Length: 269
Image (cartoon, rainbow, N blue to C red; front, side, top):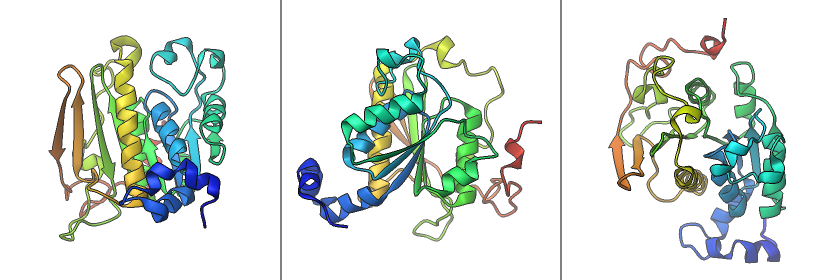
């Protein structure tokens, strides 16, 4: 695949980067990335992936735009209130880069559709706002051998990591899973949702942009990524801290005696 004169101009600042260049830009153009959520994290993530020239962006979200979303969900505008977020996202990304294909999945990620959806993409980026979806995405990517960039938001804090548990590290040890880091979700009711606790809008922009950097880095293959590392951001003191973590041989999905072999445990009775 050769770059057209228009693409050479559009992506010129990438192409002159030593670690990206023309070959890296072509990798971006061939990539298929699935975004779980078109909200606070998914908004800046989608915008920067489209601007970067990622060839196909899939978006899974069954929600509609509400007025309270607009404080942080910059993919959407006031005229989009009441529209499906996937429709609003498709229109916004077309304005950013008409050469990017947007595949809208106006549905919730569930145990019934996760494996099929994820299998159609090269890499997954999860910016969902529920623990159930976060664990489902992580388990599905681990079982489906797909890299996952996952991030979360608190009121004034955020965290991001990358998971490639289907691969091994330089020493031959398996890469960690999400469940190596957080074996189980917190009990219901122990973490207040965004609507109750609030969230700093600009923090969503920062964390979504970090997700975009990590997705682009994973596609092109430069630098040191966040596999086995959790980057934690404290917006109150503007501090960044990196916590290393490793494979837990007792984790239930890739451990020595795995007990999670499919997504049936995510099916609600």
